[in-house]
Image (tube, rainbow over the protein chains, first blue to last red):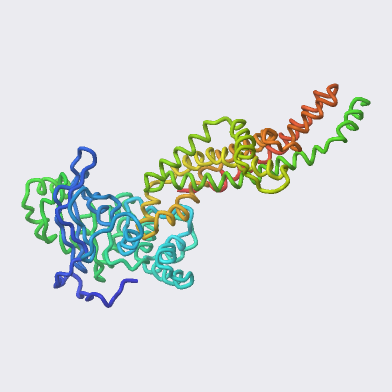
Length: 265
Length: 228
């Protein structure tokens, strides 16, 4: 599962961990355009080991793009992105190797539609890490058990509910023993009754010390699991702080306006 | 009745079954070659390397745009006669292999386009997820994208194979003389009084071969469709 030797388990729940500055992901002066649209404006963000950073903001604010630039699913125009201190490589084998270390969970699950759930989870370890089939399958079943869908292992993705698919996608990412997990609106495509089963898995990951960047509209998750909330609007990071501080005393008008819209209905 | 039995006796001089077998064997060999070349071409077409994309676009458009007869004439009169490309001492074998290469290259352009339409049915998130777990471009194409693209393009690939079955008759242009159209030509010259029956025999033969291929492609495209 996750490498339990590389970080401290923090317990009891809710106690702020004491971070040694050990950056897993760093974005330095990152700029990104889509055509004329300036989607990331001079982004600076550091995520330390074991930290859970929640990125929120109105749609079109650039938060998904920010998430996708970190494993270079979107290339950037200028600036630097470092993973564990190393500059993000260009296309090619080095980039594939880096992506193997960074787990990604998508809004639309993106499970491989022609493969069983088990094959979805074992594909990465077997092909990118050359793990023997039997070992990969044993690990995959343990992960599927952990996210509560071990009995679905032989099924195809389309036979599972959205919540089960997203949990399978999380297991697929965890199978690579990532140093960092990226969640790009993981619950936005789910029926309301399935959101919690996915959030529960994410909260337990956070509590175990996984380093996570989570783009989400789930303020409950941010309160329960985030160490830091980053508020984005129009391609800018406008605020950064503890969930408590951000939700109770937002500093900017944009953030106040955004929170008023999503928290009171 | 008498007319029919005379026709039967006349056709006994021609090995019709063997002629059809020649076309079927051309189809199998050229079809395999077309699938391989078409898959390579479409992989180049979606690769991140722009020069490979350009080369593939050029290849597909050139061979899709040239009439098959011209491709086959080039095989016989340029590749064999001018360039002296030869595979054996028996020119019959040469003609046969050159026909397979010509048919294979020509139809690979259509296979590549059929596969490209199949790739367009695969959501972009599938490739992103494959790259996201650390697969290289070739791994993600081979393991994730192409298997789904094949399943999504069985019907157009089936159409290309059906066209190929019938197009193998153009192999007569490269000098394959024992296949169906040459055999039919010879029969008509020797027995013009049977012309209608001769046409009917060969037409029916093709219908009998093509119908199962059409049925198979329809049923496969339904059964193998990727459920999303």
